[in-house]
Structures are given as C-alpha cells and as structure tokens.
Image (tube, rainbow, N blue to C red; front, top):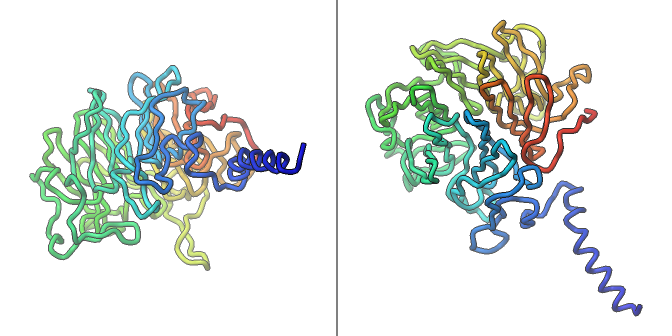
Amino acid sequence: MDRIRILKWITALTALAAPWFAMAEGSVDPCDKNHYILRLKCGTDDFPDIITTGIATKTSIGAPLAIAVDAGGNVYFGNDQNAVYRVDPGGVLTLVAQPGGPPPPYDGWWGYANPNALAALDGAGNVYFVDVVDNRVQRIAIDGTIVTVAGRSGGGGDNDKYEDGEWVVSPQRANDAVVVGARATDVFFAPTAVAIDGAGNLYVTSERSDLNGLVKIAPDGVVTSFMSFGCGDPATGAVCQASGHIAVDDTGNAFVPDSWCRVYAISASGGTDIVAGSGDYRMPSSGGTTCVYLGDGGPAQAAGIGPASAVALGPDGSLYIADPQFNCVHRVGADGIIRMLAGSCPGPWQFHGVLLAGPNGVAVDAVGNVYIADTGNERILKLTPDGVMTTIAGLLPAVPQQP
C-alpha cells in the first residue's frame, strides 16, 4: 500500500473517531444528529433535523429540563433543544411539539420557545408548558394544537430586554401588572413555572422585576389571585424568588421552591409555611451564595438543601424535591422527615447506587413511581416504590456507580 493510500486511510479513521474523542473530552459535536434529537443550526439558516419517534432507551434525548406523567403512565418531558416528547409505557419516544429553533447562545438566535416547565396534564390530556423566551404559558392539545393560555404571544414589547437572567420591563410598560379580573393573555409577565390543580386552575410563577410572585388563573382564563414574593417580608410573603418547577395539590395549596434554599407551601388563602429547608447558606470567597447541606433523616424544616429545581407530590402527600446543587432527590414524608431518595448527596455513607447529575425535574405517578429528569446525564429515570431504578429514556443505563 503506497503512502498516499495510507494517508487517506488515516484521514478517514480520524474523521470517524473524532466524535468519540469529543464525547470523551465533554465537547460533543452539537451538529451530530446521532447525539442530539434536535440539532443546532450548524451555521445555516435551516431549522435543525428532528427525530419524531424511536425507542426511548436507544435515542439520545438531549438534556431533559422538566418532566410530567399522566394517569396512563405516559411520561412527558421538555429538553434543552426546544422540543417536548412523550415516552409511552411501552418505551416508544414520540415528538409532541417542536416549538422552534435552538435556545441561546447559538448564533445569538433565541428561537421560538424553551419548554422549561411542564405541569401535570389536565383531565383532558392537555400538556402545559412555559415558553420562557416569549414570556407565555402554552397548552398542547391531544391533536397537537398549541395555544397561548397566559402571557402575551410574541413576548414583551420592543423596549423590553433580557438582562442577568430576568426580563427588565421598559418604563412605558412598568404599570402593566397583573390585576385580579384581567384575562391572563392580556398580561405581560415573565413566567418560570406552571402547575394545574384538579379543578383546572393554573398556577404560574413570574420573575418579572415588578411582578415577582404566584398567579392563579381560572379555567376561563381570568386571573383570580396574585401573591407577591418578598424575601420574608410579612406584607408580601416569605418567598424570595421561585427557583424551579412548582406543584399544587387538589385543595389549592401550591408548593414553591425558593432560590434561598427552602421550599414553601402557599395556601389558597395566601398563607406561607416552610415545608423543607433551613435557609442556611454561605458566601464563598469567589462570590455569590451557596446553600449548605445537612440534616438528612431529620425534620425537613431544619435540613439544609439546595435551591430546588423542581418539586412534586406523591399519592400519599409526600413531597419530592429535585436538588441539582447536591445531585440528589429528597423525599419529605407525612411525618415531616426528609430523606434522600436518589443520588449522592454529600457524604459517601449516603450513597444510593445510581449517581445523578444536576436533576432538573421530578414527577410521581398515581402508584408512587418516581420519574427523574437526570439533566446532566441526558436521561429519564424511573424509581419504583420497591427501590428499583431503570432508565426509560436516554442512552445511559441506570447502573450503580461509585461517587
């Protein structure tokens, strides 16, 4: 074999091996359609390719951001590539909605939507999600039709801008606040999470600078209440800012994770109680704040937890908390005791087998199966009541690992 042919073989083998080296180095080619369900623009103006169906455990699903489960055992999740998917009990992955192009920072293009938060499905099987780019809550019907149910379609005004992780409202729109009795689609706010109760009422958290709180929207689309968040101020409520996906029970109590290391319960009358988290934090020399972990196996209100990315309620009333800072999921039982359910919170003595990487979502079905959006590992996990954990979507199996 002459030297030219040898060089050609080396070039071809290098091209084939490049994606594997990239994955090993943590810099997977974003244009590789075998890695991401929804590909990035990759330097073109065309919409990315998308896989519409497949075997869930044989398809890379991107990074799941939120998760919900319906009464039939179908699991829904939104991912970081702006798509909403369903995994049925048979393990088939199906595209439910492709709101649009990729999120920032790719090419400075925002795209259309980022399905950051999914609520429990309503009785008709509709799926609700937060479009964090266009500042609205949308509903996906069974036939795939998408409609806006809260917020103004198309986002804020021309003079509004997104800075430091939140929307800054222009002066001429500063008086545009939620008013009880207004239609939710007439209000501009920055929604971050959505949940729905048994009566069909929507609960939406907003982080707009002048509209930071919890909005309740009746089934007819009218705002019926608004509770302002105010970092412990009794006049405005104890919650500082919602840090993740919320949950609500059938009596209208909302469970809201707070950025300051706690989870609050907000009653239908507007009262607030701490259900988990001591609020302990420290300020590292590098700047900012970080929550302090402690108290596993003790009273939940005295335990140190991270700023939860999601909370969910079990059929027995237990509260489940996804904690990305400490890479675990907590469970608060009816007795008020908090225990690590999955992952590896600090301390090897608390290791439970399968490691999590920044879990961003948690959901529980009617029989107590827990579903975890293991975001950093790009998979959806299912944990049965008897402690068996399996991967139901994504390529990484649920194999016990050493921390």
